[in-house]
Image (cartoon, rainbow, N blue to C red):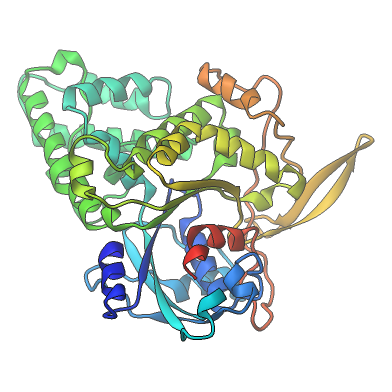
Length: 455
């Protein structure tokens, strides 16, 4: 839509549109990010780093009906009420593609100010599960190579032993739908357990968020070991794997992903660090793989689908920065940038501008110093999920990201020099002042990078 809209704008036919894609893996905070971003664009008192808000050239913002009649609307009002109401709580996470249109009235700056009137820019925010984006890497794999890769990496992960037991009990000499469903249920259970334990690369993504496909043959297959090759089970699962790619994955990229102009990728880096070196390496590999989607000219089906389209800016945002004292934020940003070096290099090579940043779309804590055994520890204080107040020091992140990433790449089971804790905080109760959106950390800087050049 972006290029066509630019052309139509040049002909005076329509207002320009920016399609902002928001994705990330589970619990990275996609719903909170979109809700807080929209609320802070409607009431811009906390958006001083967004230049158009600071200098007054962004005159007004309002919600409009979304342009795609077949895509569910992002439920902004309900999510905002959950986050900022009298009993604040976290809203439900992303489970399907949704969209919201925010229109911005802007006064052009500089030489254009005197003779050019105000313009309207439409910001179409597209929310989609990061688990679905993980399926990109399936498109260039056949069933044999995918099975070998998955079975190798699942060793030692939660739920893997249960799946292997069901697999060993399966009759290879004939295909039986009930047995296939039992295998798929065991494999899906493994994926859920692995994701809950902090692993990122859990494919196929629709197994975790099936939506209307739950129980369908397209989601009733699993990886199989070599001893199943050339059996009826292998042949049917290979056929279903192909159908999943052609009928589930490809339409998603064609209908939604291929139309993105700007992209933010949210990452729970702190959660991965807490889960351990293998989870950090798994996240690094997963993000490097899926972000090949942002590289125009990539050989194969994706380049044909995308054509000349280009995602102009990509923000890699480490979320939950409010779980750390601000003096540690630069270290979190540096670790995020180092984790994504390979993925960023691919995107930069394609001409896209990229940025790594530490943010909190909704700030839930205040900062304080804890005195412990003669030391002063930079901590945060917030409301725990059970309602108790607590001050928390998660440990010190290393100044050199390599201190983490080298251990992760070597496959270490645990960190040698530190133990990094996390705490789940609930949204803090409070009353917003007129003109202010929800409190945040660097959400205004994220907005400036993503679309500030257009307003």
